Every structure is written in structure tokens, then in C-alpha cells.
Length: 347
Image 1 (spheres, rainbow, N blue to C red):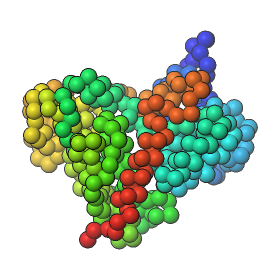
Image 2: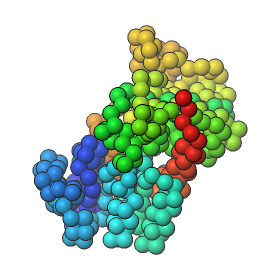
Image 3: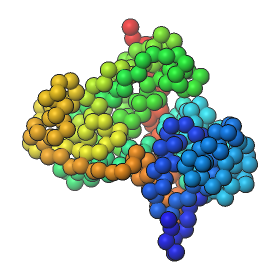
Image 4: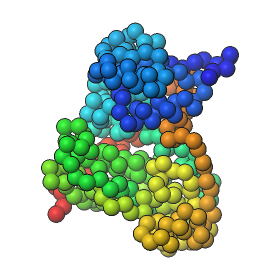
């Protein structure tokens, strides 16, 4: 609920799937945010979503949604392949736009979106929500203050166990399927945010039976800092984001994209404890029993409220990009994915 002297920001939501539902739930925790409207391709879905999530209006016509609803911000939560067209429609309607990750399928699309936002003077951001989580912000501040010394290497893994199903959106090329666009954007984007610009050194990827990328290994560098990222639809691995420095190490704990905690080890570390596998390892990861000092950031949300609050916070400053998640960095991440996929799949 907005205070008497605060502006109430009217949000419109495009899409009614799982991530849209989580976002709508979390928006209830954002001060000065109002769920003004929802758009779906069918009125039945729009009405059901509105009734379940306390949204004021529902639409099945995108033009009507953008012109008739009293909207300040549009959140796009549809499959990746629809993002560009819907984002441009919202921008051209003069709306500020938060676009679910990945912002689109190609880096060229981001440049198109960036130019459109600049021309209309609206704020546009990729909803890479992990960057805004308190645990990630803690990691960023710790690194900036030299808490673990000069960074020497980064290792990140992100795997979710998903059986191959060609009808599943995650494996459907027509809907932008593939692990790199779905999961890979998280560690690549966080590495860009935490250690700086990235350059791809080498990579390999493996294909699902229909040719969609199912797993990948990326060897990158940020200056002289090596960055290794592994990701896939398969048995879960560490699912941590580990940053090694000359004076210590910092782990964004499992599962790092949700980031409920971070652990710091003092002094040089050759290898951090495993966060997967045996019960002993899992207990050690949970309770930080292996020499690390854990900082926990408990919350009663999915974590999507932090990005929404941060987006609202800069409205009125006449920005067309958010300083924490600028569009140029969104394009850089997609360009790396394009470079990886420009080589044939490995056996």
C-alpha cells in the first residue's frame, strides 16, 4: 500500500504462466505497487489469473491492454520468442517495461529494444532477478570492498534434473528451448555483474535428441580471471557460484539463482567443499560446518519482489536502462550464448 505522499505504480502483466504467478504473488510485497491489469491470449486465462492474484482488470487483446489499462509498467512473462514483439509494442505505447529473462533470443534484439526505449524515453530492463537478491548484493559489496582480496578464479554450476520431452517448452525450439537461454543466462549474467566483462575462451555443448542444447561447459575470462560455467538439464551438481580470491573465497550458496545465503572462507582456498552428493556434504553446505562463515538472507517470497522494487525506485529519473541490469550487459550475455552455439554440438 502506498503512503499518502507516494506515487502508486500501476503494473500490467503479460502472460499467465508459472513465473507470472510468482511475480504477481511477490508484487504484493512491493510498496506502492498495484496490480492493475493482466493480458492473456484467452479471456478465460486472464480472468482466472486476475481472480487468483487480485488484479484489477483482465484483457485478451494486447492493444486494448496497452491503451485502455492505466499502466505505468508492463512485465512480460511469455516464452522468449515472444519478448521482442511484445516489448516493442509496450515501449511504443509509452510504457516502462520489465522483460523476463532471457530478454530475447538474440543480442541484435536487445539493441533494437535499447534503441526503441531511448527513442520513447522509457525504462526497460531484463528481469534477471537474481542480481537484486540481498545475498547477491552482499557478494557484490564484499568483492568491491576487497573482502576476499584480488579475484583469482570463478566456478559456477547450474543443473536442474529435467527429463527429455520434445513437447516441453524447455526442449521446444519453436518456443526458444535450450538450457543456455533458460539456465545458462543466470551464471553468465552473474559473472558479468560480479567480476566484469567476459570473453569466451572455449566451450562445448551437448544436444538433446531434437538438436536443442541440453548441457554446456563455458570457459571464459574476465581480464586475467578464468571463469568456468557448467549448466544442463540433468542430475543436479553443486549449483553454487564460487568466487576465489587471494585472501579468501565466497560462495553464493545452493541454489545460487535463488540465493538465500552466502558463505565466506578466510585465507586462500584451493577448492571449496562440495555442495552435492553425500549427506555429509549436503549438511556441511547447509550449516557451513567446514570453516566458512555464513550470512543468511531469509525472505517470505520467491525473490522477484526485489527487482520490482528496484525498478520502481529509479522511475522518475528519466533513465532508459537500470544501473544494476543495463541492456548492454543483457546483449553481452546473449552474444556469448550465440558464440557457444555457433560451433556444432559435441558427441
